[in-house]
Length: 112
Length: 111
Image 1 (cartoon, helix red, strand yellow):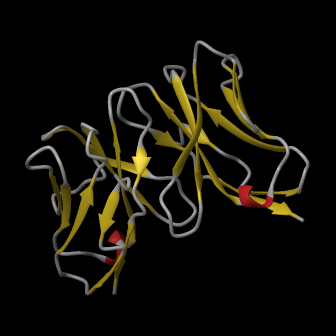
Image 2: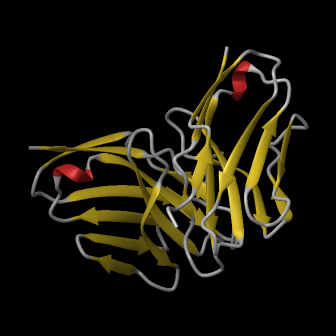
């Protein structure tokens, strides 16, 4: 296992377009998290899955954001009608019940 | 309101000396604390953690100290090496899934 994998690494999109990011967690990890990080700040929690169940969503996650983890393995994060304020690094992490979170390299989104 | 604060945006330390990174928190319900290290263009990497039932945890060159009464923790790196240059994040948790992060401290190790 090569760790947590995120795709794409970079995404540039025009304002108003929809984007989708993918995260493949470490295979034996049942927990999956999405965070957003902007320059000079620590990661901000967005949402959390335990297996396929989405157990928590931050109020930062507006109606334009949706996340899925359909089979309890990979996850997708979709942003509809992107805005310039959505420009950030989107980080995915996974863990088991007994380990700390392991992070992917992130997807850097730029909305122009 | 920031629940986890890292008040030093950057820190410069001579190679071979001790690096001390500080973190303060406000929520007394936090019971687990972690330090992550981040290089540019990479995701954070777990470094070391401490439970609130302890006041010290050591792993090689890295030691984390927790002072619950002061709501303060610190990460000591001894001796500092050039590869330690990175941004260090402090994170805290009172649940089993959500981490609250500080803004990070950029550590620069000078040769």
